[in-house]
View 1 (cartoon, helix red, strand yellow):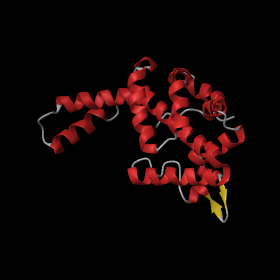
View 2: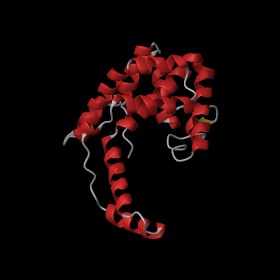
View 3: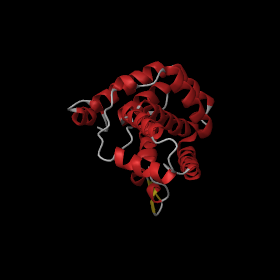
View 4: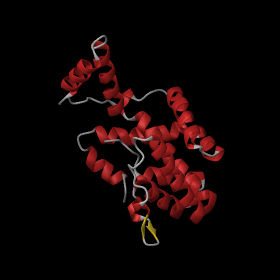
Length: 202
């Protein structure tokens, strides 16, 4: 499961940007819980769900375009900024997710060991090796700031993020990383679920 920042983190940085709390809260729902956003005759979730565009570039682009259009229509530029900022914070968390990073390292290692084999054999061996393995993650595995900045800039370009949002995130990246690192660290502790519950949607 992808580790995403709590709504509290999203609200904090939206308000620091200058976005009203009510607009930021709606943006959180539009992105993460669209079924709770009412439309005439239904809900936004009936058009696009949170995971609808996760595995398809075209669907992901369409999903975010719908989200931006909805927020622009109801809240103007402020609504668009709120959605853009939400997605960038999500992507920073994705880049910093130690479980994902540990899994990627394991995949690369297995891939190296099976180099030269047929695709069918490599796939079979990879599934057998990875089946049931518990991924050990450590918050110290988080990449350096330059790596995150470069990857984030590419994502911002794909999302057509406004200059205002990009400059804000880039300027405050150290503090944002500190917030996400604390949240990630809590998720890896023995009582992480309780901590996340307190830090999350309240």
